[in-house]
Image 1 (tube, chains in turn brown, red):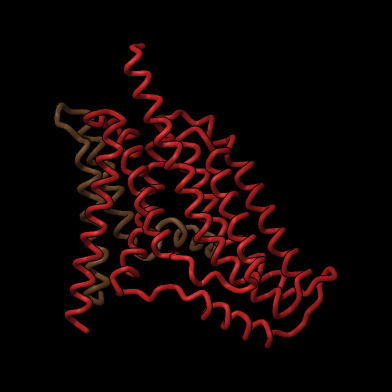
Image 2: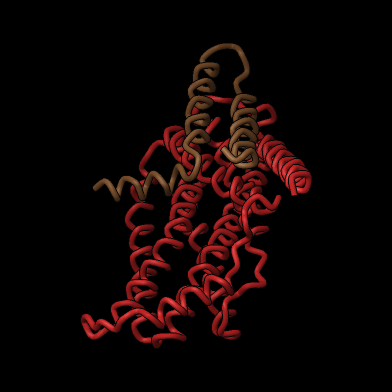
Length: 63
Length: 258
């Protein structure tokens, strides 16, 4: 069971769990802003650029 | 419904259908090239009967997964589907994109099909012969696992991308076409397809999955994109630009530390 769960975790989340965590947070913020009069379309693209860069930067810095 | 809107809607639908088929085709091509390397190594080293039985069983299992989960996904309301599946597609797409950027910028080694092939052949030659159900168990299980694991990513893309777009059969068609093309090429050359630009294909798949994951995920979360469906092209351009920018920046940094 543990191996099965680990397989699916690796399969969907992959090498860097922080990318998935960042995207989940961005979805939360988007859903929250979508209920207000503030435009929410910019949150996900900005989150994609940010989490991707942070993840790549961690590899390049050897962390 | 105004005629102009219907025309734009049809145009957007055609565009997303093209992207759907292309994404499934390219992802399937990358994964089939990798699976083919394993199957060829097993077949040429230990014989074809058990190897093809393993690959065939895995292909059937993948088809069964898509056939079983596909109809189940179509009964979920589209807004919930786009939120959940868009999120999954985005996280999954970012994995592809991240790996492709690291490889393109030199921070991760490019996959060498010939090296994988040589390693698989050496391991296959040294593995003991154990017969189960009339099959060479080693070649059966290795080719089964190889095809199943590589194919699962394609099945995931076909199911997520296809269900959100409402066209699982179209996605399956794109994926199937790539399998046929790569297998035919493999039969012709009888060696790993080392000259296929795997990383470029993976980069394109990552860009498309990230774009559609962002677009549909945001819509599922309640966003109205400025410009409606046309915003998809803007998201696509944005993802391509930042990805190429990251490749350039990381490549420069790699050269500086070399």
